[in-house]
Length: 247
Ligand code: PXP
Image 1: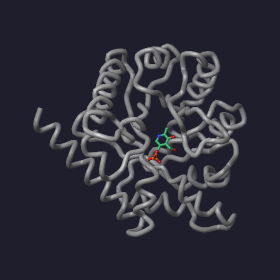
Image 2: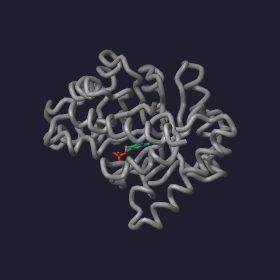
Image 3: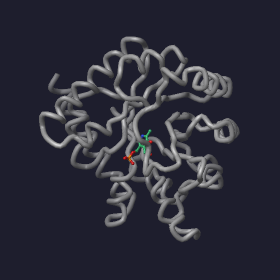
Image 4: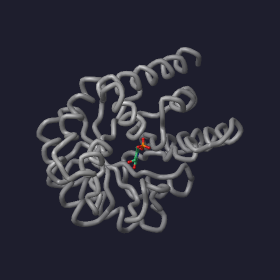
């Protein structure tokens, strides 16, 4: 069954709006696990706009599911990750001005920097995933660089305006999954996924983990995070089961 990674960055965004102590992403993580999260994800950004060093430290002490730390290859952040020892590090591109992660990593042009970071993580026993667009050249470069996983960027699928555009993006993701699996990479996916668009994706492609943040945290404002997570988990379970039993 597909594992659900819940990204709790935006619980911290609300806290940082007032630089106070609430809502605490560490509490949210425990409730997300009770709701069925298989993985807790946080992005420790260089500008610390949401998740803080203290959150990462306390999450490592209190979360016993897989902890997935998203980050750039900035040496300071890589060092924190190595000390924290999450089960998985997901490398993403990071720009100061962006609202959220825009586009996948350009592994082709940054191969040396990425390879150096991957080596450090591997030496520390941490799995590495690279967040990339579903392009053959990036998938091949991710394999060459030594990553165990890729996370395919589903942003274009999520933003597709009509059925034809959505189906075209599903086609690109499907081709990406097949190319990656053929060369021995494990495949995750995420970005922009919602309660409305996750079903078609799960019904169409085979991945190990889905990483979802904003939509779950948005729903949690109204129904609580435990319920928001369990509703997403149930949707994924039903669509995954339907795909497996139909073919
Ligand atoms: N995967 C990666 C690599 C991301 O950077 C993000 C956003 O932080 C997500 C998944 C989750 O995206 P969203 O918040 O749109 O669900």
